[in-house]
Length: 514
Image (cartoon, rainbow, N blue to C red; front, top):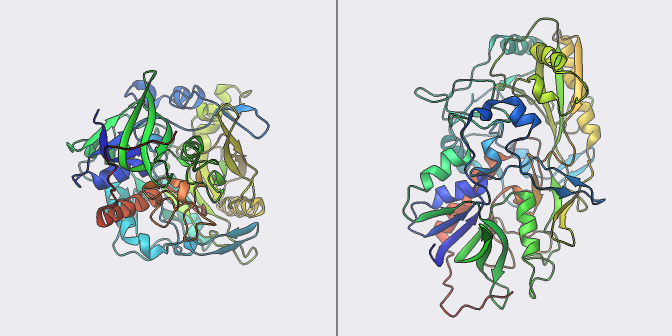
């Protein structure tokens, strides 16, 4: 291991992986630290019991709720992070999402950048992550400088019928923007083990396949796996980060760099900064505003299952979405959210929520179900936060908000599906403190150091060479999948680093603040 790097990136998910890719040809020496290992390629990748019931690829650690009760978080520590098992939906936020929006449950704050600042990077992100979609279908879609780089993933016959029935109601069903390798010569086989599963054939557009593997081909990029970052160290003034203290195989190492980037996810990046408290940063690194860990968001999600006696033969179900209620309706003038398909349910996937129902019944339901995900915006709340227990464990305080809007979305979805001919509709909340696949907030960016931790390029206001590049920077969660926005901002930050050359020499006589 080299003793001095230009940049250390902690984490290999959508933020860290993409940033490493953006800088791979810069000539800078880059060290990537990943606390997990490569996710194994094995038959269990596509085994529903192994993935959903046994949670084979989830972390085995426990976090704690406000009362100190342990819970098992839905997060993955591996090369590629949570993108290894995500649903591969790659939405751009709407143009309005970057502005202040009044919700029934409160205010969604404005971002320090506009949609136009991210638009060229959205286009690059869609190409990099193999995003398939169809322009012109979505009435809420923001302006685009270019069409989708790959054509839409077509609906299977059952979904085509639903789309036709909804169009007769005056609604606007559309094709989901999907990051899958389905173009000519691509690897995707349109299986039913995509949403929530690791892809056994590397056909999902994830951070490992799209970014880390290409980055590691550069002689200037090094990655250490199974390396857990304990804390980030600073110089005696506290104004510059100097090194990362990490553990591997029971031994402690210190890696020195000119620029340090935390890309551990909204919960773990906040925890890392809090663990990195020192004499100059007694409440946590870069936490002069007191906002590190606050405003934790993770969306409000419900599964709506439509049932009919006839079996649903759909295999690759995650192709369909609806944004007609995203900004409200004539009877509810506030944003409600997004409707999109879940990956095709299988009996084992429901066992966790319905443990007392026998598998034959669950399998029978799954064969006849059409499965929708309803997603509403989770509004920022200072008291929804990530902290550390006295012994340094992660503690999450979270109380749901904006539920009236979500209930309206459920109501509208049930109405449209009943009109479309589905007599039995079941709503199953997918929330809960352990469900954090869309985690964001906690280290928000902004122009005012009093009300934000990071500037618009995700650099800490009070530590000049410290960056945070994951969904921590989100001031609001919108009501769409966050990954494409993380990727776009990572490309933007990478471009900024290349332009600004914010690589500051450490010097041989460095003193580290403990």
